[in-house]
Image (cartoon, rainbow over all chains, first blue to last red; front, side, top):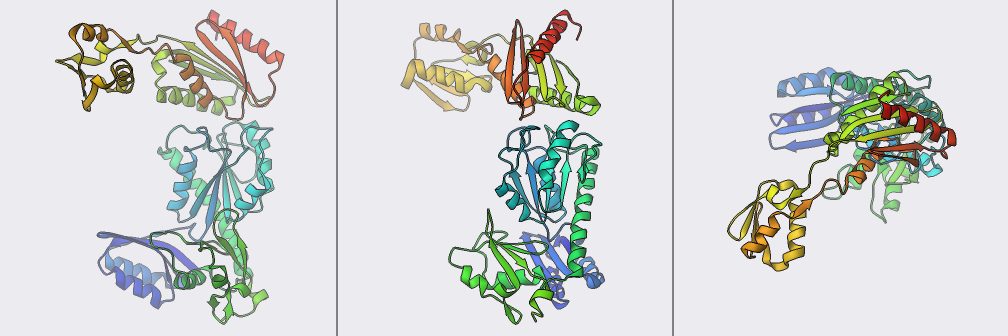
Length: 297
Length: 185
């Protein structure tokens, strides 16, 4: 299995680190060089971690674990009004990004209230395009108990956050709730860490399921090929976003046929993936299991 | 400013006290409000909030925020400059020119200048109710959109819910209001 970590350091010998990554069959997912500072998201086989750590130490840089890397997470709030945005929605999303996830943020059209709270079919579909969701609700226990029912229909792993410390609902993290300022105190950061740990458990459960029925190819490998065949436009970031079971690809109109015919090993992309137009951005490529497609290489 | 929240349980009461304090501080109403009382009934989804209006700042005149010079005004308090410019442009049109951030050139005679210095630029009493209602709107849960105000002197009291407001809640709110007026709450 691949491990994803973040390297931060200077420019000294960082190209040697990149070569070492490629030599051991790894990938560079993101790279940012700002004058003398570099940041890279690296994916490499778990068993080669020692080699990478030694090389990173040689360059004087640091390696940091990214437990949520390779996952796309949706942060959902009842509405985009002042009550829910920007605090604590943006703090939660930022914390998840610091742990390696790609985040999206969504305000429900009619998520406010207790009895009147609803989620539409389209909103549900958009959430289900991601690997996991975090629902950010308010303070009142009675509201949380009723509102949690709108999350039950969502078919991806989710966590519900709220204010009340103890509420008898599944996948709940308390002590977050409504905020009027950034979460910067130690207790608040501890709650964000707890939230991340719970999401990590859900994501790891899903990774274990995928290990038992492996995909035809790794999303990392497919991303590498797609970035070569359909390079991103100048200045565009994140044209290919990794998910646990595939990719979200943003392509130009007219490139759909090109995308379907991209060669992955001995097969075409359309043979090994379900390609679906996203409800809100790009195309979702869901990689089929190897048991269905057969050997790709 | 005193804030008291009841009925939501220990955590929610403390949380909403913080929300009240920081919301009213953010919109600069802290010094204009004596006390805030909020009653939360999440089970029935009814929220009652009552704000007692306190001291209100006296009107700001041109002389309060500028120093008169020779055919010019030097601004000393930038907060109300947009309102001052509005007033000046309305009255004198092209005779007014903002030559720098804190300097306004004004080609008028001395008599007119003297009269101008006593003109009111901003009266906080004019939009106080609107600002308090905005603050209440930010504090109350967003789903509690059905609102019913209760009239009383020196106070703004609102009942809010996602459901139609029942008569019993109105009676309850009035009873709370009379307790507050007597100082029992």
